[in-house]
Length: 329
Image (tube, rainbow, N blue to C red; front, side, top):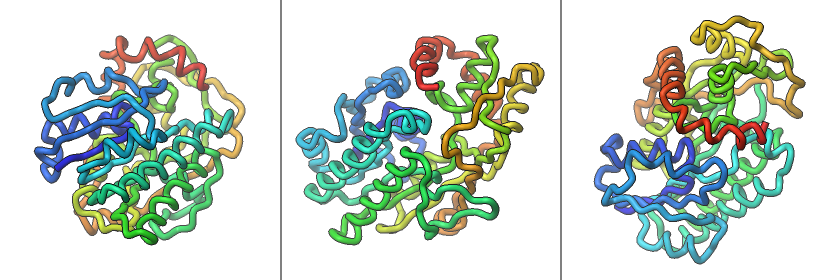
């Protein structure tokens, strides 16, 4: 089997690649893997260091919008796992153009090349943010898409394009939509690593608005395991929600981190709320659970403590990234 992984040097993509190359997904064992990554500010060669030199791994620096490059890589590919995306909401609010280019036009370029090469399966990795906000209950996969941020709108557009390529041309596409990820190697512009690195640096922790926005937290290991299940056995044309089952307000999340650091609430800095800030996300994972027996395996308290320890041990990884992360804030 030959697998093309786009965005394989980013946070989630690199986790998938590291586990794939180390035999973590028996259903995909023995594959030849090509990573295509543009290595923008959030793509990092160090994320793939643990599997660098693996004889079945090839890493290509390039843009998913580059049609000839993508067509060449797509030849003889059996499976595409598409992680590559601009993903930081605050950046999308400041400037949406790159999000449309990468997330929409880049996905279209990949889909067209996959169709031309007769790819056997295309997994498009998306987000629960495409659903908008929900006051109570949880979203099933057939909920209408009501994105509120430019980032979410660009991902919703790429979801619809992916599904349209299945319905129009028969391309065997599956879409996954995950809740908020956390874990090692996450770029420090995102909430949990930003909070951790600021606490480690003796700084305050910024908290949007009243701090009562609710997110469901999913360890990146669980997310990637769900993606691997869909990659091997997902039904073409279907959407699969992948959630972690731990709903927390941002305020409670910060309080748990303060406890781990032995810090008090005086370290919290209240900042103006984000524009168009969704109040609550929650996905229903019944479908993937019933079809594949999926359930999140990493308890949040354990996963959060492990993540803090990883950042404590890997200052060499995140300290050089701080200037870029703060510029995104």
